[in-house]
Length: 98
Image 1 (cartoon, helix red, strand yellow):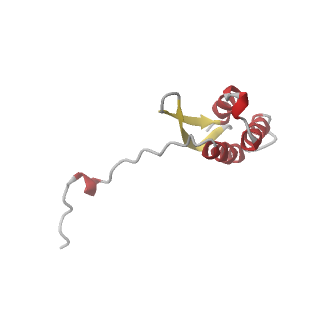
Image 2 (cartoon, rainbow, N blue to C red):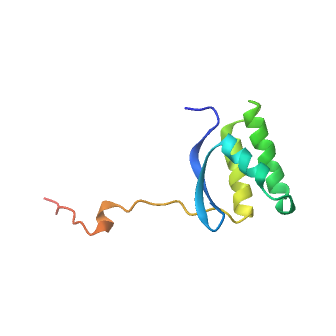
Image 3 (cartoon, rainbow, N blue to C red):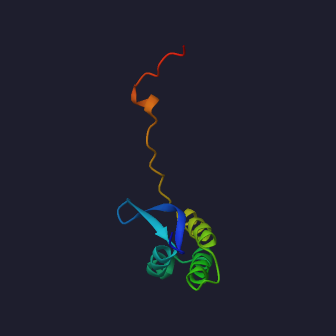
């Protein structure tokens, strides 16, 4: 497992509402660096600081992920996680109990 890999990808909206999964601290950092300067705020600064620390081995990927998620929520770019329907919701019947 990579040192900078998130436990779970962070799914965000980019461009014209296209979903993108951010899977590593490096990807999150690159996204944050490209974020428009006029839209940056305290959540952005906190996330970029946490990513830099994790990349420099002075912090953890888990902390960077939490900060990136907080930034994404504040920026309203969190995309819903795709859920795979359970077998029972596909119209398949479960066997009757004996």
